[in-house]
Image (cartoon, rainbow, N blue to C red; front, top):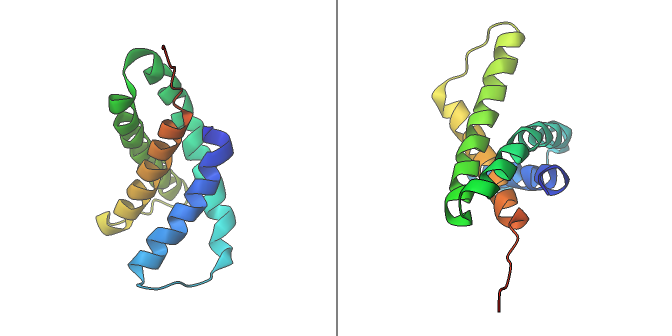
Length: 120
């Protein structure tokens, strides 16, 4: 679920955050492959964490924990790429939308990956 639906959700959430930030819609398709690949990496790292948490905690605790891990992975990936590409440091107001996108993306994937079992 994470690797299949996560990148698509990541692109949609990124466009939503950009539309809210600029108070409108700007059709800039150059960021779609970047958002897709970034979401793919974040979801590929966070998916196994969610799978381990599925055995230990209920969904009411697992989804927020997975969202927190997704936000941390997204910010960590941006900071790692910034350090790798010349030691750039990003200000906090730039990292907050990235953390929100990572958290919403992985939290939604965690909720969608949950299996309900009816024991009636």
